[in-house]
Length: 233
Image (cartoon, rainbow, N blue to C red; front, side):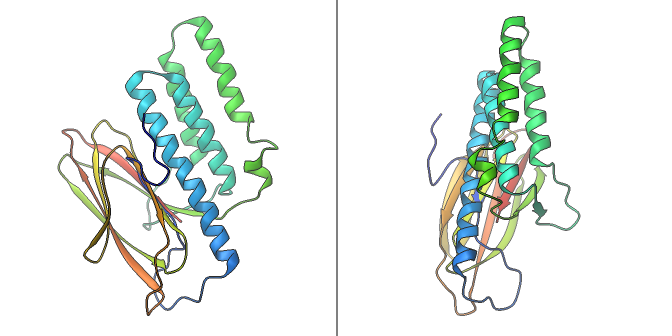
């Protein structure tokens, strides 16, 4: 499994999202919050990689580790994730973690391994208590969208960010179909990757109206439907 600090097959986008109007010059506090959320989103992308590996290799321990990452990310975000689209239904990160634990349990039939797995699950659930993930405080809410995408279909999502603010984007998918992910700004293609997950972070330069507009395009390249989750800050 190959992981990249800046780019993975699965993507998360961060950097104060704005909808309209002029934006003030970002403050030091704004930048620190954006950087904190960006770091959490990178962890979500890593969790997505672990889930893809665990399912492919039938490795339940990888699913449990991914679930632990989701629990810590949920605490860091204060349990707050805002839908990008009105009416969109989101599965809370802690519930996603519990679903992964149950999926991991279903993979194991050996009693001894099952007992060891339960110890690992308990450790994943308890680890955030008193740890840095909790003591450092919440980094701020993230924004998220989840959609089903049919074979060969393409989904396009338009986002706007404040120039000068750290930005990051993360995409994870349920597989097995791979998603072609592209992030563009005007005629410039910033990212073009194909896989189950991806992560990219950058700092958009300031525009005359203080905003930078970006387009995320995702295409299902497989023969079966899949579900993707795009997370931004």
